[in-house]
Length: 397
Image: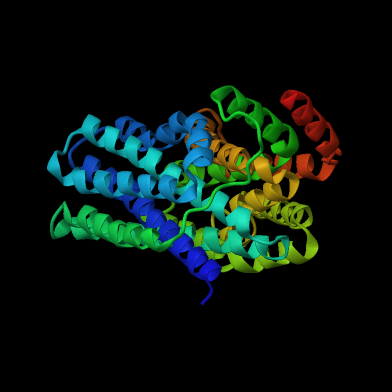
């Protein structure tokens, strides 16, 4: 195995373990709080701590990455996650756990930002979709396996936290085998002002590529947070809701890699347009088939197969559009877009369920996917490279 291959597999493995810890925390803490009589509103508030942590730390991540390189940022993020997971059993308190989840959001974002940017930096264009889809695949598998830890609270409430912390620590140790590397640098001064300028340039180049991560954050959080409420209101059993969510998750996992490889062959924009259209049609069809669990399962499996890759394909598309020296800023903005979607999704989904009658919940997701589909279809990239280079040259004088 070459050094580059070893680096790649270590990075995607640590991402998988991170996904496992995130997937474990959501249902685990929800069940513990529910058993302790914490209201559903406060339960939901506690879950947002992770995304608040991501948004809080995002503006400050690019500068240390450029100064210290990929490895220290990933190691620091992993250490925060390991320590935070280990502290959960010490004190069962709503606000203590809120702070720990916020810290995990900060640590996970540092870890994901570092690994994501590192992978996009060294991946050749011909394998970029494959590599990023494997990144998404490992995270998705970890996220799907994580909830299986919840029943362990019957043995001891601290056991899932300890197992997750130990697994994260094992993955974290392997990071020390890697040789540090730095993102492509320019000769501009590395200040907060310059970082904000790079964010502006990155948004100008890649704003359309931030829409798929935004949409996926909205879809994932709304589907997991709001759909169970809607499902119960239309008479679905809890077991049926679990089957439906599992169908979507399996579709997303199974087709991550094939779609990534297809995007290398046929182009990121073409594949994104196709999967967004298929996803929107699948959710539209689901709105007419709510009385049949089997039909809904098929619709959600097809939807997962299609739009389950929108986050990873959005990152790959962003990398295609972005000058290499702007990749750190572009990856950060992808993370911010995903977090905004994740925060907004459950709220809008809840409002939709609360204030609309005789309108299917699936239509809000279908409508969102159609908006992103039409935007990407209509997008015509402008040749901004010359203007960007000229502005940089002027700023150096």
